[in-house]
Image (cartoon, rainbow, N blue to C red; front, top):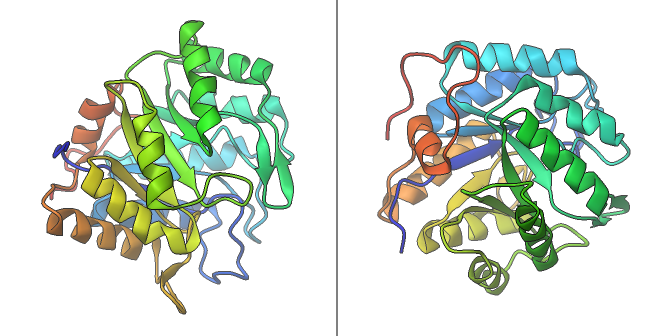
Length: 285
């Protein structure tokens, strides 16, 4: 078992969660940045960023991304992970554009799938184009895996020289149309990875806590946040992203590991360094 410090990623708002599901979902750039900073103080090393209009509508707005980057990197040393998934219906050109910020990490959704009531298109040609963008801007891809076949898609990109180790895999489990959030699924996916990989697990909705716990025990890393789940427990909405991060940090310590700092995360994932002007201090476990 890998007992290295466990990285907590926080997915602040995503593109699917609605204000109807949680009235305090962060939506404006200021709200998203504030939530990320609170999560950093609670123990998150990485913030996964989507942007929205103030009314909650998912949007592609580079000014919003720029404001969040400036606000978060101005007071924390957090690793920022900008989405290239965006939301269903956004153009390929829009999705690639966030790489222009040259973040340390960005998501790379590794295949096409039914996604709830929509269809999420990531053709082989687009995946190659997207991977070339990661190389151009020296951004580490977070390989978003919704089912086993997407691992193979990524390994083909690696064979073509379009993505490079160390590989950072994010298992996104429980999406309608993807692999279920079960212990058996997670164990199988981990066994499919090449030697030397680092990985993290997401469980949507009720699967979040179970997948977080399994990942900690198996030596992986965890993602939590309102993009994936708005409840703290059945029938009780989470008060904030920070509350969900605090629970993960508590679990990590109770299960015998340490909470990774942003510096730990950069070392583990082979990242290029701070984005913007990081704060001198950092969260310490």
